Image (tube, helix red, strand yellow):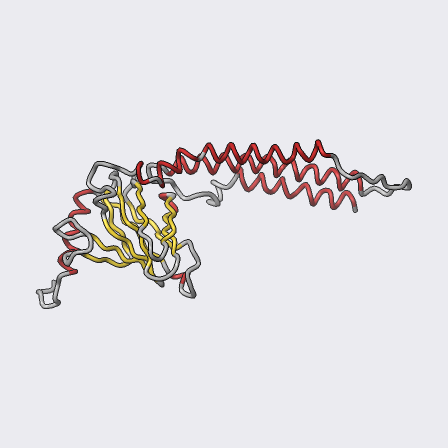
Length: 261
């Protein structure tokens, strides 16, 4: 039986490595990265994955070896030990150094994405002039764009539900807010994930590099309808963006009496 259980334990790292190596082939990995800083986040993830993976394989192989070696029947008495302080210091120091390395390695990427001083300062959309204000609530997304005056919170604001329209290859800055509980704005292809907190206005930015339609989901359990709190981010050309904004404005201020085609 010791051979059987040793084999079972060895199958764990073997299958783990197999799924890691073949993840792309089976579409078990991340969706394509289409934002300006997505690759930096993927690089950090891959670094941590390799560090954890190596420790995982070494640990599982050692476990299998110890099970095989010490499960054999013996006639002599067991030897008792109170531990080894030097060994304990080593296996405490190694994870500590690894965690410090990860902490310092990610600081630059985190600062570029999250620190307001590093937000885009020029272009069509900035911290002072966001593209829109996104409101999360149970269980939908609402996108409020400024009207002709270019300012949010005025009577000419335009609101759209579920679909966030942005131009491609432009820095997009928006304010994220919540009407009720904690939600989380998550677009997997952009590697954008930001919690929306009640009573707070949280600035977020990204730059989409490829036109298309991308899933927007809530990544924070927010109630019984959390599963259906989904939306879309539509990335279009600059001309298409202007056309859609004009159509949205017409529809928003329509009184329902205009001629319909």
